[in-house]
Image (cartoon, rainbow, N blue to C red; front, side):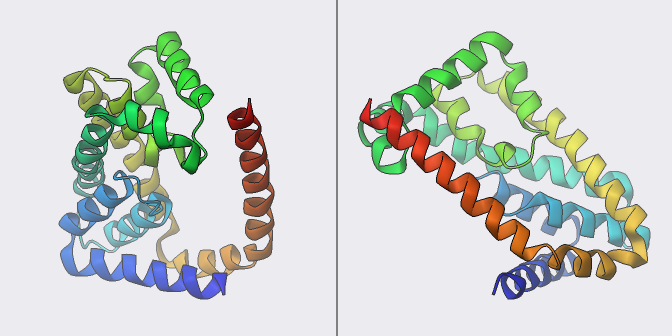
Length: 205
């Protein structure tokens, strides 16, 4: 089942980029940055694969990815900015978001400042959802979006470069990836169980 989902997702990603070029990269990366877990780890390497075939330029693909991240971050940021914290303080328990989670986010930003957002843009999974807490914490807009662009640009360059190096071996990579389906499922279940347990404990407290 997971194999079928992954295959369908990757096929769709490849179709969008093939049909739309750099605009397709920007669109998919915007979706990822809008709190929708569309893996950039699948989007950008395929863009790199097309770069290796001469379909588009290396820098064009990387910049398209970074621009898409900024575009997708805008609605997510403002969703958190306008009443976001009040919403999560009132209804967050239904989403397993506790008061401690908000306090931890505050401490993270207090400790690292705006650079926390720059760093998070280069971390898998976290980068997808960072815009919402940035809005909730009312991070300075111009600084946040500049750091979002810079962090996303570095991330995009790395993954596009990976795709370029993979070249003709992209299909082989998929075969290897699919062999780890069971491991992926078990890891998700274990981590998900730990996450739910800890958050239920915090909510009870």
